[in-house]
Amino acid sequence: MRILLVEDDAEVARFVKKGLQEAGHTVEHATNGRDGLFLAASEQFDLMVLDRMLPGGVDGVRLVETLRSQGNRAPVLFLSALTGVDERVKGLKAGGDDYLTKPFAFAELLARVEALGRRPSVDAPSTKLRVADLELDLLSRAVTRAGKRIDVQPREFRLLEHLMRHAGQVVTRTMLLEKVWDYHFDPQTNVIDVHVSRLRQKVDRGFEVPLIHTVRNAGYMIRGET
Figure 1: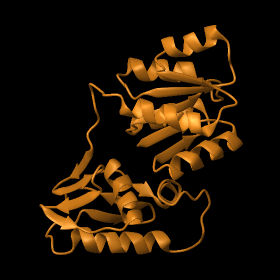
Figure 2 (figure 1 turned 90 degrees about the horizontal axis):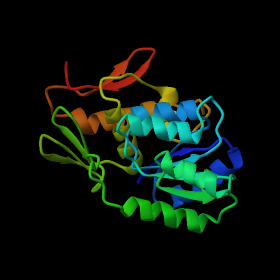
Figure 3 (figure 1 turned 135 degrees about the vertical axis):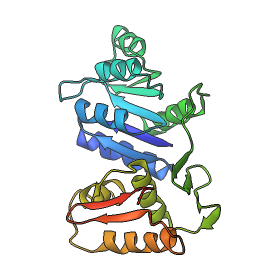
C-alpha cells in the first residue's frame, strides 16, 4: 500500500517508516499538519497514519476533518499519547478509522494498518496510471506503451510512477532524491540523470512522440503532448 505518515517525532517516524517499508509498503512522511494536508490533498494514498498532536497549525483531528470534507475517504489510523476515552472518541468522530495510543508495539500497528487496508472501499482508487499510450499498473507492477510490455527495474518503476503521478508538472531533482531515493541531501552524483536516461530509452525508443522531457535548469516532466 501507499501510506502517508504524518508524525513530528523524528524517532517515532523513523521507526514506523522503516517498519512499514520492510513490510513492503511505500511510505511518504510529513513532519507537520500543513505539509501532511498538502500531500494528502495533492497525491493519492491507500491509507494514512497520523499523529494527533502536530505542529504547523493543523493537528490530526483538523487534518482529517478537512480531508473528509473534501471527499477523501482513505482509511486513517491515529497515533496519540492522548489515552483518554474522550480523546479517542473525538478522533474517531472526526473521521478516523482506528486509534492506537503511544507507546505501541510495531506488530500491533502493522496488524491494524493491514486490517484497515483489507477493508473494501466504495470509492476505491484506480490502480493504474496513464499518460497518453503509456500505462503503469500499480498492482502487477507492469508497464506498457501502446500495448507493448516494457521491462523496468524497481527503481525505474518508482521513478516512472512519481513522474506519472505528476504528469504535466516539472519534477525537480530534489523531489526525486527525496521521493524515489529517500535522500534528504544531494549526494552530488549523476544517479538521477543516469536513471532518467535509461528510463527514457525504454519508454520513448521506437515511438514517434517522446513522453519524458528534460526541463533545463529545472528538472524533468512526463507529458503526452508535444
